[in-house]
Length: 209
Length: 235
Image (cartoon, rainbow over all chains, first blue to last red; front, side, top):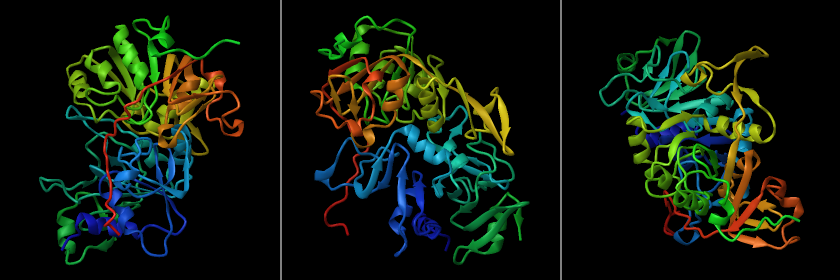
């Protein structure tokens, strides 16, 4: 069985280390917060100006002045601090955040990522994604291995406009875990009951030993 | 001493608005947006605006009401995904759009207010936003130049102000407001409460009053985009 969205989030959560400051993107990365391993204490950063993001509020705790980067209502913790967007991105750009986990439309074997634009189809904007991939110490992508048509999202070269160049360290897909190394992507782990032949068939990027 | 306190947003904007002007508007999504000034700008009839704001509201609320009324000529934003009318006007060629990475946008505004005309960042190097920008190497890494941003007016939202315009913000409603306060030739702050001098702790002022020329006590709907809750039954 290939990994489900929740399995991928749980696998990504194993990348967390005690004491890390972490930024989680929207989608599957958000689910990583539900799988933080016991004994691992991490502080979540929300790029709209908060460190120490708490869980969703109870109905009577909802506060319009307290949202995350996905514009969802959230809560604060005892460790929480608030700051401006300029301070928030100083943390991100300045390399103070240990790990960013985010989604992608495509990644390349050289560690490029495309996740913000489909020309003439989707004009939403990059938000904080370009800053995160350029500034955070370690960047991990979590995404499906192939698109809905079955084509590989792990490419030799991205076809969509880039979010960042040579900035991805690791990719977690429904089929396995891959590191960006010299010459291509290295298979680090294979999801249960997935065959290497299936990975080879589903991957356009160069796979290396 | 000059009086900074105005009765309402119309009076606070009096004499400041003109067609073709540049306006910075604070907020992230619908959190911490200057609802009162946006409404007053719409009723003033001013048009051909360049608006610098992280987002552009939603259909029918926030900056969306200026967009619906076709008052905006150009937006400088990082993300506009919550607004169908935005997409329609942009694809129809009725609206100019400049996307900035969120951190670059925040820093351009901070720099504009701090007298810094240009600075170098890694963000966006090797992407389409790098086209035409000056590149430079520092310690073996490539950076590109971004420029500071200023505005004719900044409209911002804070929690409390004293009569000198010293401001404090609340929770994540701070976002872009403090930088924008510094980068407008005139900054109009709308707040939930105006207090007497001495009531705010001088050690904890987020925006010193030198950046704020006009203050109003506003009325706020504070609409929530994605109300997400858990139930007490959840572990």
